[in-house]
Image (cartoon, rainbow, N blue to C red; front, top):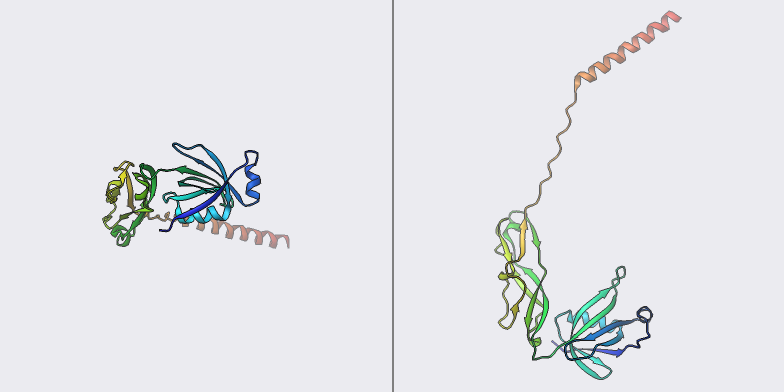
Length: 220
């Protein structure tokens, strides 16, 4: 994969975050072991493209006014309505020091309990925490779901195959995927109709009608 370079400028401490966002700049912070914290700003389009390509587990060359740093995107904030990126945190890394990060878990294959038993696939864990050198980082981990043959079967973190130089930190006993049986909604039984009441009601109306005719005849 090509190296991702992201340009940034040091941010004026007096500059308000909302003011920067109005002119399509994103406020950010750079920090990490052995470096000073630096407040930054960068073009919205640049960070959007970089994050789309890198995610949170690809090394980025962060160019701070000509000084390049190896970083990972540690955290991203979004606007609750527009979903625009509103703030970014970068963490400094050293290529010879192991890092802790989280990697997505992607399910692949066909679960017989879904295909043949019409169950619903349930993924309980979508990412796991790992430890490795920066050069050994990967975008995602694959978990095959062919073993989910019935509603009692389950796959755990320990079933994920890891590359040799990556160490798992997440509890290996945690369940990643299962298949749930679909609930069948039972129709409520129709209420029984008491025909005797209908007959009584009808008879009563006939009697009332006869009485009305008789009264009219007497009156006439």
